[in-house]
Image (cartoon, rainbow, N blue to C red):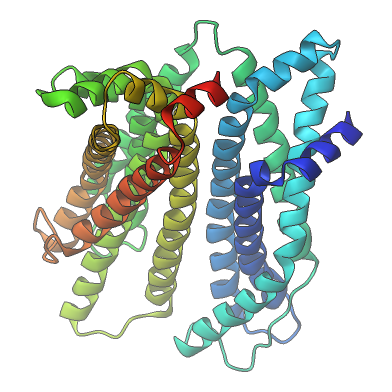
Length: 436
């Protein structure tokens, strides 16, 4: 089966492009930040510089590992779902479930390993640039030299390969159990995330404005609430669709299509909700913290600079991986509907009406994801702002939130409409015949 997996990759490289990109970016980020461990471990590095470097490597490395897993899992889930007929044909030809599992996992591990190896060079350059940022901000002494060693290399390779193998195994298992009733574990996980997230944001009031850990419970609470809403995204989307007063051909078709595909569209809503919630909470809380330090008239301490750097870097990583998951899921879901679009056109719908339907679907998904992500973000922002500045909301206005919404809308609508336009270039009869 390993030889079959290698031939599958060689003959259909386009299918694995998204997995390769996710593995490449994930490995690059993991190795870039874990190289700070190698740098901090050199002889002669002072304790303040070593602490700054180790903190950045530990925090961002942890976030990066989780996001690598989710990004690779998202791409592989779409890949495995669309290969259903091929996998069924292998089963009918005599392949056992274990052989199919080894083939799919082997493909994923091979692609992830290639992506991790290619990422070594960019990670070395990124690590050097990151160290320069720490030097310029005064967080690390200028005498510290950059080092890319075994911690960065082994962590990047092992985490990426293990994430790809585990994600492929779970994606295949989910696809083979698609027809069975499920949802209990997902509902329990969502309830647990919402409960723990709510308790975390409420615990913010137990801290004082001068506590160094004040931002931690509010930030982690907002993240857990985002995760809880993301896990409940099919139910949330269904509840919203039942209350939408849309009319006209495009609106009617959009609501009908979304109702039929709520489970599949959770792969789109999950990164959208998590991106909006995490980015909103982190950026606004960092803005409140920076304004409070500036109002006090005191210079920023090394710890405050470390926190600001980490927050901005974490948000950047979240944006990159959320956009990868969102674009890949939307592209695959829209391209997979070529036959549906062809049938609609044969039934009398014009290309403009089909595009209108896709556009309305994109708007509904964007509004749903942004709304619940914003609720999660506000749940963390309000307690933190009340304790830190005695006001309910930050003084920065809607500028940051509007920028986050613009990124989410551009990724969602741009991907879905561009893919639909490309799909509609084929004649309707040909699209139906090819997909049949």
